[in-house]
Image (cartoon, rainbow, N blue to C red; front, side):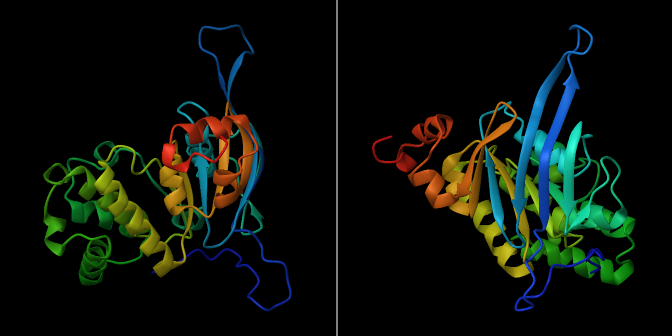
Length: 278
């Protein structure tokens, strides 16, 4: 499958400093306040900055309404930033419409697979659609690629002929992951992909994401409110509160020795992760 033709990072051993896959600087997304005074806004994202390395999983964690989902949508061009800069492999992204190569390189898995999958399309059509739009394959080759995606994501080839309602929540999320993988992206924004699933199914989906990352060298921006889930999958953690990142660092450091009171509050909700003396 065709991958993004944008510039690549310096190869290992070249002596050059590796370029992050994604650089976000002072990202802001403000929404006009309906019914309020003119000029008043909701500061959903208010100056967020972070880097994401190739092959890394960064957990963006915080309570509902803190702005973390808006960050993910702004990176993909699904909402327009008010201010800030986003660079992908060293190249500045346009604030709104993404070029086809960028749309292939950056995909998303939404929280609710029931809402994100078209109920009027068979699973095979859902997985084939992005490859048809981007002219990756047709005919027998397309069928082979669809079947391969299903098997890689823990389903069976016969699933292609069924509609989404015929599957469980966990299976529907596997279909959503397969669709995100169809264009062989570099980056997948995972927006609370396990929060609507039973605990046992959550673990299966997290293991699937980890296996796919190892196989394809994916990078994840993993959005969650659950520190236990973030601890299972992420390399680094960025804690977000009221539109800002209040703490960021390696997973073990953030979980074992948090420096911000809000991080300690989130950890207190997960007794098995609560730091000693916290």
